Length: 223
Image: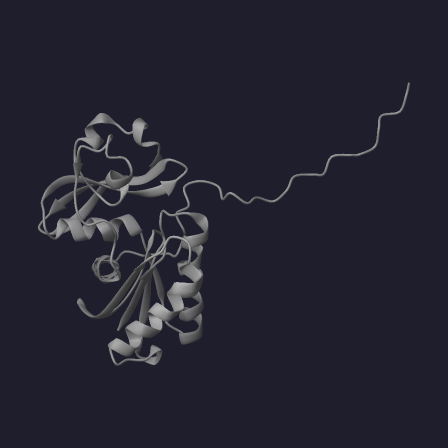
């Protein structure tokens, strides 16, 4: 079975899949408590599926793009569990998982835009064909007003249209990716022979950075 989890957005989501079947799933909308919510959510999903971690044969984790702190919680948890259980861990673009949910119910080109904070959005452009989302471009981080005109006129899934309704003309569902969709995307890509490294997509530098060289406090000597 596959354990799929994502903490790159406001929705902390976990799912346990047997093949493409979601045995149990949980999502909690809380953009500030990823580290507190994730472990209990994993425990809840396992109990609801009447399973244990020993039955997990692989792990899929959303690698963003997303804010540094939240994204790191999911990636560290997944890699730690993978090491402890001795199972492979696969990284999936979180926007791809959200796009797959849209593609299951619609066709044509569309955009996924999620909250990047700092009055920006993470976004990527997709084409839905035969219920599968294919990424055309992205992911990128931009101010909504700087997005290309042809992008903002397309249907837009994710929380971007809720945050910037004056920019996005055609809001669409869903708002957040689910653990089930993330797991299904991982399975499809792995079956196609793709390698899915766990490399976080931060797209910009974290707020907290190492301090530079300290300035001297000595006064210059008179010449």
